[in-house]
Length: 215
Image (cartoon, rainbow, N blue to C red; front, side):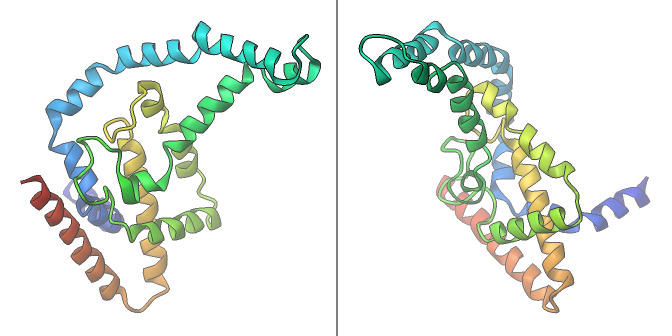
Protein backbone atom coordinates (compact mmCIF):
# COMPACT_ATOMS: atom_id res chain seq x y z
CA UNK A 1 0.00 0.00 0.00
CA UNK A 2 2.84 2.36 0.94
CA UNK A 3 4.60 1.57 -2.34
CA UNK A 4 1.47 2.34 -4.37
CA UNK A 5 1.00 5.69 -2.63
CA UNK A 6 4.64 6.55 -3.26
CA UNK A 7 4.27 5.62 -6.91
CA UNK A 8 1.17 7.81 -7.28
CA UNK A 9 2.88 10.75 -5.57
CA UNK A 10 5.96 10.35 -7.75
CA UNK A 11 3.95 10.02 -10.94
CA UNK A 12 1.73 13.02 -10.16
CA UNK A 13 4.25 15.10 -8.25
CA UNK A 14 3.65 18.24 -10.33
CA UNK A 15 -0.11 17.91 -9.92
CA UNK A 16 0.12 17.66 -6.13
CA UNK A 17 2.69 20.45 -6.00
CA UNK A 18 0.49 22.80 -8.01
CA UNK A 19 -2.56 21.71 -6.00
CA UNK A 20 -0.88 22.59 -2.71
CA UNK A 21 0.22 25.95 -4.11
CA UNK A 22 -3.30 26.89 -5.27
CA UNK A 23 -5.19 29.12 -2.78
CA UNK A 24 -8.53 28.16 -4.36
CA UNK A 25 -8.02 24.57 -3.20
CA UNK A 26 -7.41 25.57 0.41
CA UNK A 27 -10.25 28.12 0.50
CA UNK A 28 -12.78 25.41 -0.29
CA UNK A 29 -11.19 22.76 1.94
CA UNK A 30 -11.08 25.02 5.00
CA UNK A 31 -14.70 26.13 4.72
CA UNK A 32 -16.45 22.79 5.28
CA UNK A 33 -19.53 24.33 6.92
CA UNK A 34 -20.22 26.82 4.13
CA UNK A 35 -19.43 24.19 1.52
CA UNK A 36 -21.80 21.72 3.21
CA UNK A 37 -24.59 24.31 3.21
CA UNK A 38 -24.13 24.80 -0.53
CA UNK A 39 -24.22 21.05 -1.13
CA UNK A 40 -27.31 20.55 1.05
CA UNK A 41 -29.13 23.23 -0.93
CA UNK A 42 -28.07 21.68 -4.23
CA UNK A 43 -31.37 19.79 -4.92
CA UNK A 44 -33.42 22.93 -4.23
CA UNK A 45 -31.18 25.00 -6.48
CA UNK A 46 -31.40 22.41 -9.26
CA UNK A 47 -35.19 22.48 -9.16
CA UNK A 48 -35.17 26.28 -9.22
CA UNK A 49 -32.70 26.36 -12.12
CA UNK A 50 -34.57 23.85 -14.27
CA UNK A 51 -37.85 25.64 -13.61
CA UNK A 52 -36.33 28.97 -14.63
CA UNK A 53 -34.95 27.54 -17.88
CA UNK A 54 -38.32 26.26 -19.07
CA UNK A 55 -40.52 28.83 -17.38
CA UNK A 56 -43.59 30.12 -19.22
CA UNK A 57 -42.21 33.64 -18.96
CA UNK A 58 -39.02 32.78 -20.83
CA UNK A 59 -40.78 30.72 -23.50
CA UNK A 60 -43.40 33.45 -23.91
CA UNK A 61 -40.57 35.89 -24.57
CA UNK A 62 -39.43 33.71 -27.47
CA UNK A 63 -42.93 33.77 -28.92
CA UNK A 64 -43.09 37.56 -28.61
CA UNK A 65 -39.76 37.91 -30.38
CA UNK A 66 -41.16 35.92 -33.29
CA UNK A 67 -44.03 38.32 -33.80
CA UNK A 68 -42.16 41.56 -33.28
CA UNK A 69 -38.87 40.87 -35.03
CA UNK A 70 -39.71 41.04 -38.71
CA UNK A 71 -43.35 41.88 -39.21
CA UNK A 72 -46.07 43.80 -37.44
CA UNK A 73 -48.84 41.87 -39.15
CA UNK A 74 -48.01 38.21 -38.88
CA UNK A 75 -45.48 35.68 -37.80
CA UNK A 76 -43.23 35.21 -40.81
CA UNK A 77 -41.33 32.05 -41.68
CA UNK A 78 -37.95 33.69 -41.13
CA UNK A 79 -38.89 34.76 -37.61
CA UNK A 80 -40.21 31.27 -36.87
CA UNK A 81 -36.86 29.81 -37.95
CA UNK A 82 -34.70 32.36 -36.15
CA UNK A 83 -36.65 32.76 -32.92
CA UNK A 84 -37.67 29.39 -31.54
CA UNK A 85 -37.33 27.38 -28.38
CA UNK A 86 -33.84 26.31 -29.45
CA UNK A 87 -32.81 29.84 -28.48
CA UNK A 88 -33.32 28.85 -24.86
CA UNK A 89 -30.93 25.94 -25.29
CA UNK A 90 -28.37 28.12 -27.07
CA UNK A 91 -28.48 30.76 -24.34
CA UNK A 92 -28.00 28.14 -21.65
CA UNK A 93 -25.20 26.50 -23.62
CA UNK A 94 -23.26 29.76 -23.55
CA UNK A 95 -23.92 30.05 -19.83
CA UNK A 96 -22.71 26.47 -19.36
CA UNK A 97 -19.51 27.01 -21.34
CA UNK A 98 -18.79 30.26 -19.50
CA UNK A 99 -18.14 28.13 -16.40
CA UNK A 100 -15.06 26.78 -18.21
CA UNK A 101 -13.55 30.24 -18.63
CA UNK A 102 -9.89 30.07 -17.51
CA UNK A 103 -10.32 33.58 -16.12
CA UNK A 104 -12.37 32.20 -13.21
CA UNK A 105 -9.59 29.84 -12.16
CA UNK A 106 -6.38 31.63 -13.13
CA UNK A 107 -7.32 35.24 -12.50
CA UNK A 108 -10.63 36.59 -11.21
CA UNK A 109 -12.04 33.82 -9.04
CA UNK A 110 -15.75 33.17 -8.59
CA UNK A 111 -16.59 36.35 -6.68
CA UNK A 112 -17.74 34.48 -3.56
CA UNK A 113 -16.24 33.64 -0.19
CA UNK A 114 -14.87 30.46 -1.73
CA UNK A 115 -12.30 32.44 -3.72
CA UNK A 116 -9.20 33.72 -1.92
CA UNK A 117 -9.25 37.52 -1.52
CA UNK A 118 -6.95 39.58 -3.72
CA UNK A 119 -5.32 36.65 -5.51
CA UNK A 120 -6.18 34.08 -8.13
CA UNK A 121 -7.45 30.57 -7.16
CA UNK A 122 -4.66 28.94 -9.20
CA UNK A 123 -1.28 30.70 -9.66
CA UNK A 124 -1.70 32.92 -12.71
CA UNK A 125 1.44 31.84 -14.52
CA UNK A 126 0.18 28.24 -14.37
CA UNK A 127 -2.10 29.33 -17.21
CA UNK A 128 0.91 29.00 -19.53
CA UNK A 129 1.41 25.43 -18.31
CA UNK A 130 -2.31 24.81 -18.83
CA UNK A 131 -2.03 25.80 -22.49
CA UNK A 132 0.95 23.48 -22.99
CA UNK A 133 -0.96 20.79 -21.11
CA UNK A 134 -3.79 21.00 -23.63
CA UNK A 135 -1.23 20.70 -26.42
CA UNK A 136 0.32 17.65 -24.78
CA UNK A 137 -3.03 15.91 -24.29
CA UNK A 138 -4.01 16.63 -27.89
CA UNK A 139 -0.68 15.34 -29.24
CA UNK A 140 -0.91 12.15 -27.20
CA UNK A 141 -4.60 11.80 -28.09
CA UNK A 142 -5.60 11.70 -24.43
CA UNK A 143 -9.09 13.04 -24.88
CA UNK A 144 -10.62 11.68 -21.66
CA UNK A 145 -9.65 14.77 -19.58
CA UNK A 146 -11.13 17.00 -22.27
CA UNK A 147 -14.42 15.08 -22.28
CA UNK A 148 -14.51 15.30 -18.48
CA UNK A 149 -13.88 19.02 -18.80
CA UNK A 150 -17.11 19.38 -20.76
CA UNK A 151 -19.03 17.36 -18.17
CA UNK A 152 -17.74 18.86 -14.90
CA UNK A 153 -19.42 22.30 -15.15
CA UNK A 154 -22.79 20.53 -14.95
CA UNK A 155 -22.82 20.80 -11.15
CA UNK A 156 -22.32 24.55 -11.18
CA UNK A 157 -24.78 25.04 -14.02
CA UNK A 158 -27.57 23.05 -12.39
CA UNK A 159 -26.95 24.74 -9.06
CA UNK A 160 -27.20 28.12 -10.76
CA UNK A 161 -24.18 29.15 -8.71
CA UNK A 162 -20.77 30.16 -9.99
CA UNK A 163 -18.72 29.19 -6.97
CA UNK A 164 -15.75 26.90 -6.46
CA UNK A 165 -17.72 24.41 -4.39
CA UNK A 166 -19.62 23.23 -7.45
CA UNK A 167 -16.78 24.09 -9.83
CA UNK A 168 -14.22 22.24 -7.69
CA UNK A 169 -13.97 19.34 -10.19
CA UNK A 170 -13.14 21.86 -12.94
CA UNK A 171 -10.51 23.47 -10.70
CA UNK A 172 -8.87 20.09 -10.07
CA UNK A 173 -8.94 19.17 -13.74
CA UNK A 174 -7.42 22.51 -14.75
CA UNK A 175 -4.63 21.93 -12.23
CA UNK A 176 -4.10 18.45 -13.69
CA UNK A 177 -3.90 19.85 -17.23
CA UNK A 178 -1.43 22.51 -16.05
CA UNK A 179 0.69 19.78 -14.43
CA UNK A 180 0.83 18.02 -17.78
CA UNK A 181 2.16 21.24 -19.27
CA UNK A 182 4.83 21.42 -16.56
CA UNK A 183 5.92 17.88 -17.43
CA UNK A 184 6.09 18.75 -21.11
CA UNK A 185 8.22 21.86 -20.55
CA UNK A 186 10.50 20.25 -17.98
CA UNK A 187 11.20 17.29 -20.25
CA UNK A 188 12.26 19.71 -22.99
CA UNK A 189 13.99 22.25 -20.76
CA UNK A 190 17.24 21.80 -18.85
CA UNK A 191 16.32 24.42 -16.24
CA UNK A 192 14.03 22.12 -14.31
CA UNK A 193 14.98 23.43 -10.86
CA UNK A 194 14.40 27.01 -11.98
CA UNK A 195 10.84 26.25 -13.15
CA UNK A 196 9.98 24.38 -9.96
CA UNK A 197 11.62 27.05 -7.81
CA UNK A 198 9.67 29.88 -9.43
CA UNK A 199 6.45 27.88 -9.11
CA UNK A 200 7.00 27.31 -5.39
CA UNK A 201 8.03 30.90 -4.67
CA UNK A 202 5.03 32.39 -6.45
CA UNK A 203 2.63 29.84 -4.98
CA UNK A 204 3.81 30.56 -1.44
CA UNK A 205 3.57 34.29 -2.15
CA UNK A 206 -0.07 34.27 -3.27
CA UNK A 207 -1.14 31.95 -0.43
CA UNK A 208 0.60 34.25 2.07
CA UNK A 209 -1.01 37.30 0.45
CA UNK A 210 -4.46 35.70 0.61
CA UNK A 211 -3.97 34.88 4.30
CA UNK A 212 -2.73 38.41 5.00
CA UNK A 213 -5.76 39.97 3.33
CA UNK A 214 -8.07 37.64 5.24
CA UNK A 215 -6.71 38.63 8.65
